[in-house]
Length: 445
Image (cartoon, rainbow, N blue to C red):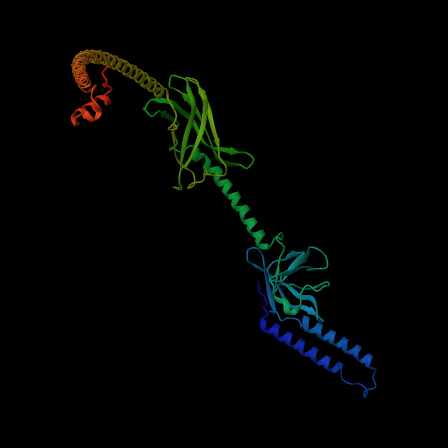
């Protein structure tokens, strides 16, 4: 939408003018008035009124100049109205006035328009005004209508505050372009429904979907068959064929199956990534039993229309699913493992027995060796003790002989010196006496 922007230079100029008028009026207010003959109080009152009017005019200013024509567009960017001769002020007070013209090229039915005044501080002031005197009036193409909106006090903005103004239509208003798009979409939907109904038969009968599929486990053994496969379901309410999978599953494994799921992969004609989904068949699927599986889709992953239909379908079992053959092989492997464990246990027991026997033999040999060593040590000890006893006896005998000889000598010395005076003893005799006294053998015992 077209807008009018006020530059900071204009606002500053208006502020300067306001200050100038104020200063001029104040200077006149205080001049002498005796020559005029008018009372001073009355003159001052008139001056105050003039100052107030000047400030009001300077604050709100003259009506800003907007473009002669401002376009109003609908949600699709199509011009439907123009607003010309825009005024935002009347006698210095905020008051909107303009001329609305229908430029859509079609008759319009309107209620209100919304104007938005953008201010320098970033805030906005919105006001809604009627296009006609009554609600929802007709505005023929190329016709014009005068519109206005008086603002209430306190004034929401002044001329110096305004940056731009723009206009918009109510979000709920339906424009001629909305009607045209809705009509075109309705025609397109009708045509597509007719084409879908015709293409459904061809899609259901296409040769790429085989009548029967055989599912095998990972060992290549057949376990189930799928038949009566349908990829669409007819909706009588809308008259359309929608994506919906159904099939009949039969257990041909010869055994009961547990936790059966099917993995379905749908290849589309447009070449996009295949659609993969999982269908639960049964938790306990008895042998030779049959059941029906279904899978509804959210939305339309594929349609009967050529180019967006089904090219082929693949079926598989989950990788984690255990088939009867898997169970048989698992049991066989478990038996082999148990036999291997038993054999290993027997070998281990034999090894432990042999080790125990060897250990016992080694312990017996060690005990014999220790006994033999103990006997040898006892014999050697006895010999050592006998030798020690012999040596000690000889030593005791020698000591006894020496003591006897010392006693005999001391007895002889005592005999020779007992009757002598100390002064009559020779040096040798005196030393002998002292030695015997030290040995407590003088006198002899």
